[in-house]
Length: 585
Image (cartoon, rainbow, N blue to C red; front, top):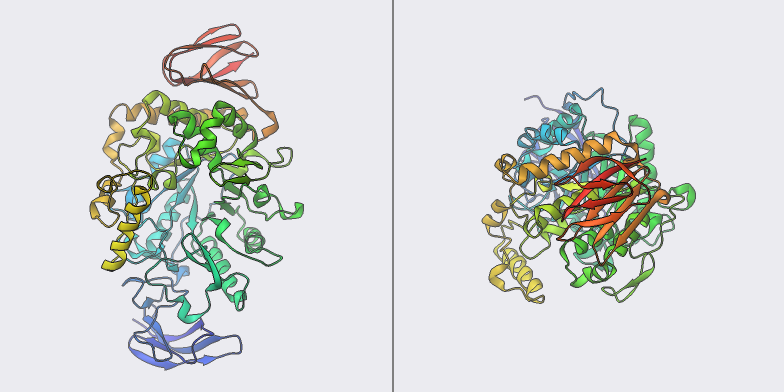
């Protein structure tokens, strides 16, 4: 393999001396006034390298390294993303508005758990009718398998999935099938093993902390380059890996005291890149703030992100379908169908209202005259709401087939951007549990004990909580694709496919004007009617048939989740635990 002179650079203001190790040879580096160390030395295109900081050995991996073939503790391998020959030159991207998102975890989406194996299932997603594939985090973490939220090598792609080259093949294959790709990224914390960044630069703020540990240094001393580290990483996925959007994990944990928040700065740079790339680029926030300014355009005083998750939609629908009312579900259970109606017309339940879970008022109203519904993602399930349950049980383990169909209908006919979690479309019988593979025995033990202790406070027996370090916990969480041919799974899959086809065929169902959404309901009889233009989405959650009076006569049943409802002028009689989409005159 040929060897040419290559430029190496690393920002490391903390050590007094930095040397470059390339394939065993050690070279001095020169520091500039801003704390950047540089060297130009002979190196093969796939040379292994790292940095010796002061007298520390072994060499540390590159904080911006693209490939970690020997894991996050090993040397970095050079990787040139421009070496891949893309087949998506005709791809012009997809706007999020009118789209449907499908969330998946590469390691459990298929038995093999690789990007190449996931490609073999993309035709299923096309036939289902989704437009966006959202990947849970794939950046480098310690161990063989993990949810992805313990990442420490932000610029690298986990080698077990196929590394950066496998990632490029996956994105390319998605684009050639008309599927956009959203990458889940975590900028609010770093994992517990393999994080060498504090040896290079002050990545954490002094005295700041969040749920997962120290807060990232976004506004303290030396934070200019830390912010650059975050933003450059986002641009890398979008530019070098041809990704169409990013899902930003728990942005409420990004503590930034500057006048221009890092999210606003990121949004501005992504908008500029979108112009350069000639395709839409999407930023979706996961936010616990219930603050519509997150997705309000910058010109109107907002941060300018494209969209955000609506946990309130999930919580309201989950509470209505299951009857669960513990913990943060309490307010939603007490709100009943009226609470769900509030969310369907205003995106948030807690819009300045009292939150019993937080023991304070929470949120801010959405100005529905200015913000369209598609800026909020609606979902019946997601990785958190399944995996953070004690046993990782999906809602399909609790609900009847009828209520599962009702939940799907409400979600996929909503004025929001619907999102499905992998396997949800057929009511997968496999759980999706919390799993880790920390090689360090002490860390593995602490993780398992912490998980057991967390749920013991809620009355769970230790034997019922899966050990996240047990390889069986990971294996159990893999999808069983043979279920697609079995009933009732095949029936639910057919319903999801029909609902998504109807959503594409009827403009009323992608109309994102929340001011035009009306909801009628009856908590006692457990029925609900959502007005979507000339369409009526009629839902019966009761165990008996229900007769519902409409505001005008229904003329046609466009879709029914079970037996056909009976139409009689302005009255519709719905079978138990069913839903229907009706056309009205």
